Image 1 (cartoon, rainbow, N blue to C red):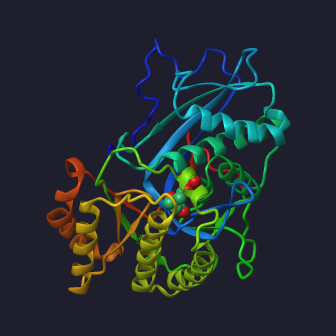
Image 2 (image 1 turned 180 degrees about the vertical axis):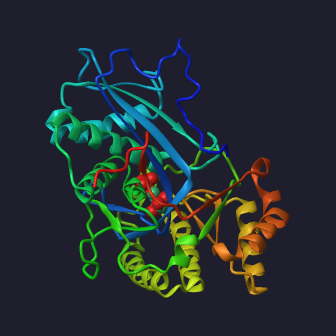
Amino acid sequence: MSENPDPFVNRTEDTPAVTPGVLLNATWQCPSNIAIIKYWGKKNGQFPANPSLSMTLDQAYTQTKVSVVPGDKGNGLLSLNGDADHPFLPKMRHLLNCIREEVSALRGVSLEAHTANNFPHSTGIASSASGIGAFALCLVDLGYQLAGETPRRNDFMSAASRFARMGSGSACRSLYSGFTVWGATPWITGSSDEYAIPAPGLIHPEMMQIKDAILVISTKPKELPSSGGHQLMKGHPFLGGRILQADKNLEEALSALVENDFEKLGNIAENEALTLHALIMSAIPGTILLKPSTLEVIHLIRETRHAGIPVFFTLDAGANVHVLYPGHSAQMVEKFIGDALQPFCENGLVIYDHCGSGPMKVNGNQPPG
Ligand code: PMV
């Protein structure tokens, strides 16, 4: 992974970042996140069947610049990285349409976006959370700029989180540092299905040092896109039990974060990862996303843990493995990863990441506050 890459530095005079005559712009960097308690299944449209909890990452992020440009094609997003047929454009246009329904200032203006991920393309690492998060931040920022208003930070962030959720559910959790909860649950004040909130309680500082090494087992596109997976939870025979389990796991995970109980958190993370795949396998039709190397790695992690090293895993809806370990054990665990786990990765690719500090506005500006 390149250090502090600036996706706009490679442009030349021949390929300007935006059409000359830009009127306004906003640039935001937004990280990805990894769910500890998984969101799997929707209710009433783009609302989660169960509350989820994620850790915001740091090194896997998207940087996006959106510009208001002169022109009469004010009804859509004109291009992404200069490409009017970019495959991510439909998702971004959907989000733009959702925002335009509510934010009149964004109607009738022409927009161009330039975006770049700092993690390698085609690594099997989902970029939609960071990509949609960054785009939502830029649009909300531009909406306020066009309306000539200065929002309060909390209002700004919950608006961005709510719009990000409309674009891609899990993206709404990328808007805060550390740990984030999305989904209404009666015992968390302020929790909402509409947008994510920072995890409640005084999270122990050591928990904010948790590391996540992403083992890229396969770079092949997923056989089951998450939208299809969420659909298959409708009428799933285990749905009722899953909702109860997620709520209980959430309560325990939040107490582990406050009590600095890494073992408790790690056990919940593994239980959630295996449940996610069990739900995927037992849906109709069932899908097996785990590869032989995924299972080899999981067994090695568990053996190593039983030998006394604090290391756990979680999985997304794919074959790649997220290795979780405390910051203070990094040297020991990273040696184990290099010696024993890296050989299972496609082209030896491991992305070392950690609990991060959330999105930021680029060009020295801070989020409004
Ligand atoms: O946000 P979506 O629709 O891509 O769904 C994400 C689902 C999981 O990544 C499997 C779990 C999660 O909570 O992030």
